Image (tube, rainbow, N blue to C red; front, side, top):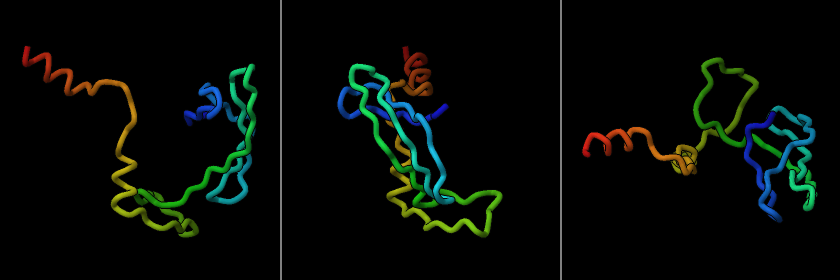
Length: 96
């Protein structure tokens, strides 16, 4: 089961990965399909590992990717979520 949240650009329904294959250590080709039967859009996608965000604790010498710059690492820390921050909620409760 995929943990990626892929959305159909046509109808905004979720996309599912029907199948995928590894073509390189850093590249996976996937075939996706919209879950909205009325839409039915299908597409080929590529998922590529491009930069190292943090080093591995079990480094493989054959794995060599460029290290992400500061801006890329900061962007990875930003979370797009509608969930409230639990710590902020607790602080608000204490203030009441």
